[in-house]
Each structure stands twice: as structure tokens, then as C-alpha cells.
Length: 143
Image (cartoon, rainbow, N blue to C red; front, top):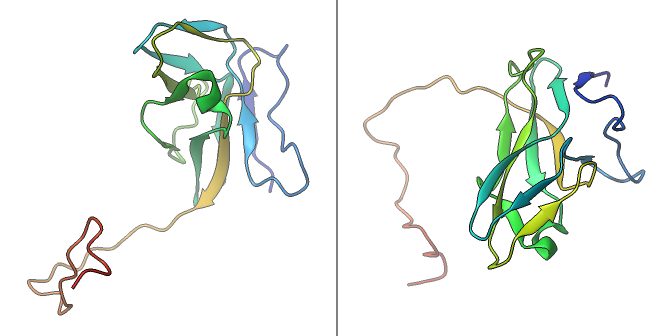
């Protein structure tokens, strides 16, 4: 799959899949930042990407991000197919959950992205779904 990508700082490498079996590519900030305890910083990730038609890009934390005391402030990010303009740089909102400042260095891999095919729903509104109500929030397995 060919994907058009724009780097804002061409001295940083293009994203890459680190192993043959990797489903996600890593992204890194184009600037160094320090997050204060309990702080959130929107970190620029140096790329604008044009997903192919019918695809979106999903942003997730790398599995090692928590070791730094950081997490994505929004859990998982979604980059729409049409968020692909020349100035539509991807960003990661990082949250420092520690009681110490945490630094992230320019070029340090912190998040990962995957291309995900999507469908759009065509709504059919009804007054009755005709299904049994299950409950929710851990209700399965309870009598």
C-alpha cells in the first residue's frame, strides 16, 4: 500500500515498521519537551499522512511509554482520512502521571500508528431492537 507522507523536519527519519511482523509504525516528536507533574503537552510528531481512501490512522502509546511515567491523554487517537492537509501535523497529547518532571527527547519513539480500514453506518432508526437487554459494565456472568 503506497501512502503519501510529509515530514516537517527532514533531518528526522521516515516512520518505519521495526520488524517484519510489526503491524504498527512508530512516531517520534520533532522537538524535545518536558512535562511537569500532572501536566499535558501536545507533542508534534513530524508527519502529515494521507491515508488511502477507506482508511484511517489509529494512534496508540508504545508499550514502553508508561515506563517513562507518561500516557496518551486521550487514550487512543483517531486521524480521519481527510485530516491530510499540508499543515495537518499529527500530535500526541501526553499526560505525565508522576510527581516528577518527565522529558521526551526529539526523535525518541513514543507512539505507534496503524492503518485501519473503516466502514460508515447508514442509520435505520427503530423503536424496538427486538433483543434481550444484557446490562453492562461487567454484568456478564452474573445471575
